[in-house]
Length: 374
Image (cartoon, rainbow, N blue to C red; front, side, top):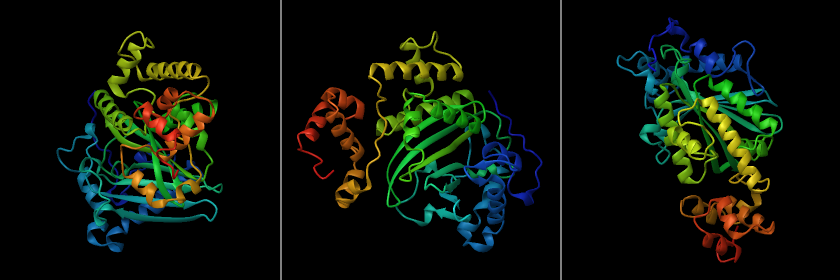
């Protein structure tokens, strides 16, 4: 379905579009992100962007102006979420206990080795809220879509990603991802996910999220990645993203994404036809999750295990080597293998649960031939 690129008449001096802010982040009058009032975020971000050219060197300080100019660019295609490929983010931090805030640019083009692939470059607003219990929640949205001139953010479909990041002494150790899409508002769909988390859903993503809510050793992140897509465009995007994370072994999705996922459900006789609505797809996935849960004896396969920090600190160099390789088990997988073996699980079943390369890889761990320092 085509998406209009008509722009709403918002004064340029505002920089931020309140309509877009309301729909992508929350109600300016009463909304909150955890304990952070949305209005506090809005006005501090607005003042930060207005003063950027005065407070930062030209390459960084000009980012807000360049985003505004790109929103007005002739030929920009809204339906493919056409964003200016600037490799930088804006990070807003709020500490609930001290009520302190901080906001800064993260310019990756200033840090060799941290550059993102060209196709992933865009300016993202990261909103990090540290609650009094130590839990950090992170909400991220494309900054350009919040600014004047982008267009109507409510049109078309949206693609989002929820992630769980394991930390040790503030360092990111590993991340797991759930990719999803909606033809409604992503905030509404996110709240529906969290209702399922609270209600005891057996979907892999919901079990993993429920396991780590309130744990200070993780960051729970929800990011709106793309918006205004056509139905085909968003299905293709989801299929590509889920495939990528499944190949990397860090996916919390239970089935493939996009059209591949629809075919999967139909082939498993969970839907009567291939072309179903997203609501029908969600209901079929829920049934699939229940069946998998019953078949596994009450265990959800593939849910990451949070490691105690001392396991990571025993041999820092060794773990860094592991983290840089894609053909080895992660420390979390190694610990899970040993836990499952202690529970009496068969080697073949363990290999399937942790998504090991093969049974022999699991056998070597249990025989003490590999990963002795974990």
